[in-house]
Amino acid sequence: SRSLQSLSVSLQEDLRKVRDWEDQINAKLAPRREEISQVTASAAAALESLPRLQNSTTDLTKELRRVEEELESAREEVAQSSAAAQDQEKVLQLRQAIRRLQQDCRSLSLRSGAVQQQLSASSLIRLRPSEDRDRDAGRGGG
Image (cartoon, rainbow, N blue to C red; front, side):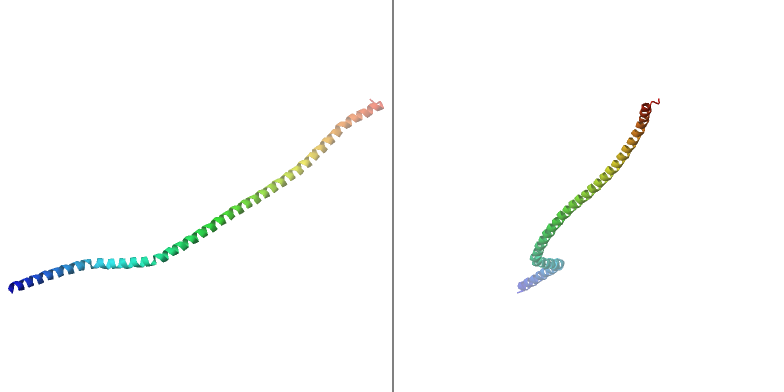
């Protein structure tokens, strides 16, 4: 019976040592268990919201495509409007150039008329002295 009693005491001592080690290990791992528990809960919440986020992403992608199409359409309209505005500006510039040319033509026409008049007047002045001589010669005067 003593050997059983000593064996029992030895086993209880070993059991106490094992429980002490277990308690020490559990104490050291307790923060990790808490962290693992939080990560697991966070992962579960993320997995739960994943389908909703995927649907939201799909919807936003469709919206982005629609907005990009609208943007491209607006860009094309602006390009066309810009081209039309540039064409209108060119037309205005051409009209102004034509007006300037018309004014220059009128001015040149007036100058040409004035020069012709001056030339006609100077030719008449030159012709008169010779006409006077011809008349004088016809009278026998000189």
